Length: 217
Image 1 (cartoon, rainbow, N blue to C red):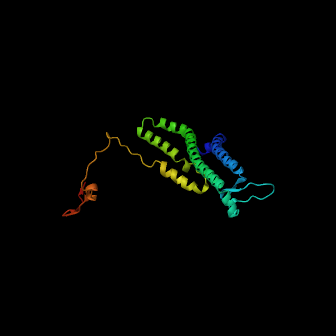
Image 2 (cartoon, rainbow, N blue to C red):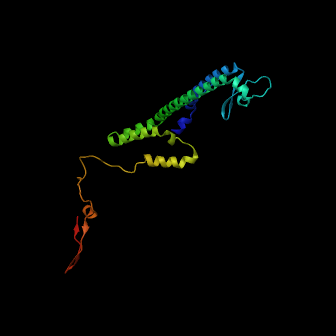
Image 3 (cartoon, rainbow, N blue to C red):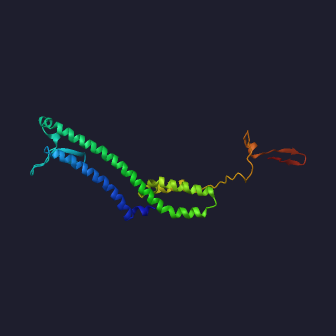
């Protein structure tokens, strides 16, 4: 299943979805930048985010607006407010697009995983076709696998042991129980479930011929 995620066709699908978001951000950022350039301002991306600078002319170094004298900043304050509002709106829109992207990627991964494990699960279903209980458990296991893909497909070596333990604990069969109401012993209700009432007792009695050990069920 993990190998199916690393294949080139599937990777290209994911890259295509990511590019849609990148193009959306770039397009809207360019719109804000065009507005800024009309006032001899520009946008520059830094490690701390996007900042407004004076538009570069010739070999003159870019100057962040917040380094300008107070009087000059006040003059262009209305323009700066509109630029900041545009950046703020873009940030909110980009966050929404990122959330939509995560949802789309999750759907794609589930579809890919389902197609990968499908043949194996169908084989198991055929093998236990006449055992409804096991068939139901297999369906629940398949659904659970698809809901926990982020854990099961984690290839980070640091989490290999934890992932193996998760799989063993969650999916290994360690008990088979029959709940068929038409077979098996009757169920008795014991209002006083003491050890003796549940398992019986051994009573010692001294007799002329020796000790005896009557066992009470």
